[in-house]
Amino acid sequence: MAERKPIISGNWKMNLNHFEAIQLVQKLSYALTKDDVEAVDVSIHPPFTDLRSVQTVLEADKIPIALGAQNCHWESSGAFTGEIAPVMLAKLNVSLVIAGHSERRQLFGETNQDVNRKIKAILNAEMTPIMACGETLEQREAGEMEEHIVTQITEGLSGIKSEHVADMVIAYEPIWAIGTGATATPEDAQEVCALVRATVGNLYTSGTADKVRIQYGGSVKPGTAPELMSQPDIDGALIGGAALSSEDFAHCIQYRLR
Ligand code: PGA
Image 1 (cartoon, rainbow, N blue to C red):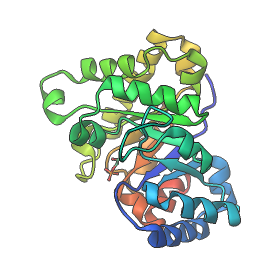
Image 2 (image 1 turned 60 degrees about the vertical axis):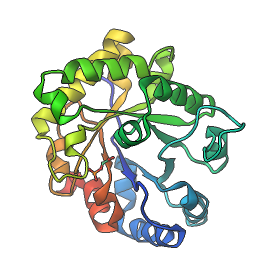
Image 3 (image 1 turned 135 degrees about the vertical axis):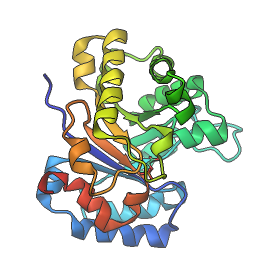
Image 4 (image 1 turned 90 degrees about the vertical axis):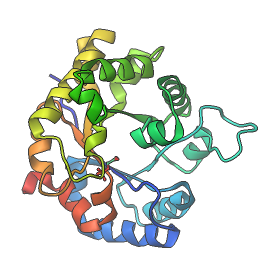
């Protein structure tokens, strides 16, 4: 089995202006040790307006945290008012971009086809996609979770080469657990992350499935991170609320010590 380096990502959503962003990054850099960032890949995903400021701090202070974005468009330029192109993000040394977060899907109507176009564009700009998937409570209760997740993965990855899939990140985020305080149990989270990996295995090879890193997301907190991270198919976490506190986010990253 491949050794998969854990990856913990902070999704700041629509929070913090660029002054507040700089403060949070600096506090986070004090809270993390060299060992922490050697053991775990860490990324932060601030709003677009914060990216340049955060990039400058990360680079000036040589902070080993990857810069990420929360979304992008699939075209590289053109008449798309209000959108941001992947190449613009790459120019700011953004290395990871979330595609298909449930809030994008639910509130802004993103389809699996949109997500697929975004993933291809992110890869074209030589960045790593974090493709998010997850079911609603209604889908789970109606017994439709499995079909929904398999469809999201299959359509989201359509036409993407095996070697790219192996290097990307997939985040399983049950919608009912996002921002609600209702974390999935480690067993529930493991079950669906294993399904995600098996789906990648069916679409590609077991080698690809073995390499792809899978994050769990949905109300991850310092107290729940250790057990979630100990599950065999959970390689990381995508964290919203707790990523807005340097202390809580650092404690999640330090799950091994807790
Ligand atoms: P949460 O958000 O940790 O606040 O539940 C996770 C996410 O939406 O990525």
